[in-house]
Image: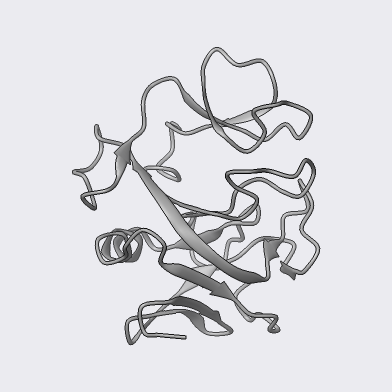
Length: 172
C-alpha cells in the first residue's frame, strides 16, 4: 500500500498521511456483498470517476463530470442497465444523481461491480457526503463535505480504495 491509497481503518479513512472521519454501510463490512444488504464490501477497489453538481460547486478535479438533470443510477439487478448511469425517464429501480439533498453533490464512483455488473452482487459503491457523523450509509463510504472535496481534488483516476476485513468502529 502507498500513501496515495485510501485505506479504511477502524478510526477513519487514511489518505496521504491524514485520517478522515467517515461512515460505512449500516450492514457493516462484508466479503459477500448483495444488493440491498447495506454492507460495504471488503476488498481493493479503484476510483474510476467523479460526478459533481455544477449548480452547487465548481469542478472539484479536472476529470470530474457534471451530473445532468436526467441522470440516474440503475440499481435494478434484473435490468440490462443494472449498475450503470442511465437517463430519465427510466422505469426500473434507480437512484437520482441530482438529489434535492446534498448527499450526491460530489460522488466518487468505484469499480465495485462496475462497469460489468453481476446481477444481485450490489450496486456500485460510491464515496459521497455523509448525512452526519456516525450515521451509516446504504453500503457506500460517507465523508464530511469539506474532506470529500479535499480528497476529490487530490486523487487520480484509479486511486485505490482499500477496505480490509477489520472490525469497524465507524458505525453508530
